[in-house]
Image 1 (cartoon, rainbow, N blue to C red):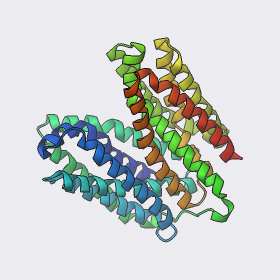
Image 2: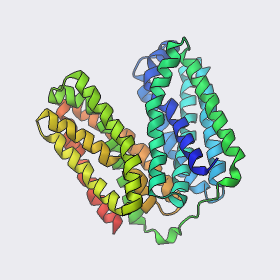
Image 3: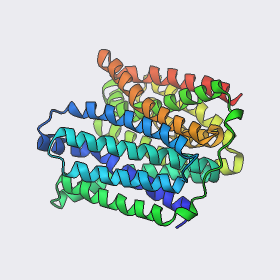
Length: 361
């Protein structure tokens, strides 16, 4: 199986369990006798584990092939789900979550480093679109399995077994994964690296905050009916998937940097539309933001990643930003109103524009 197809399969497999945690948590917490808020604590440990693993994977690629790291990381996610499926306490379950995020951080960094060295704009975007496809299918699959009478333990156990098979596929195709050619670290200036980390953290935070708080913003802040708001948020995530499929092909023709620059501006434009009090304009802004943000991270890694260790740091920064910034914006919404979502998104979007211009130079 070609490396590109296997890379997409790995992202789909990792996204399936990750996107079902929120759906399964009500059943999990009852079984483990935990309050709802426990999940927030566990997620913090998971984010830290993912960031540490991504950073370490970037350095390990100097010694290991991408295929070997992908096999180990994918196997670790499968083992983690097996541990969670038999957990009798929240400590064991939390250990499984940390193991999963260690494995996913490794897979995420290795895939992006390999893609930056071997894939063009279209394929790296399609690889990330595969993650969105898995994240979309995960809740549907979990719901179907629960409806068929399977417990949450069975759902995690089945997904763990599937990931173990994917790990086996990586192990059997090690020869197909030529080690990514690191770009000389000496040509990458430290300020540019730091700027790229700020950029990826902010970009991931914008994506996460818009998706997490978009429904509350539309219903409570703009008075959009619940059903319509749900469709708009679904369209936001749909644009994240569709944008990577379509704009990746456009970047292949027009150039990655040109499309990336337009997409960065588009994120701010979408956030600006969300500030408009009129409900339809605000809803359109959320959708525009999703479409514009779709290719930003893949194209940014492709054009600025540099050496493998830099890609690992960028992936780690993305994990931290996707957790910290939505949490901070949530505190702002709790302290005021749901309308507090749009101004921070615009401020972050403009910050992303400034940082991107500095890094590009």
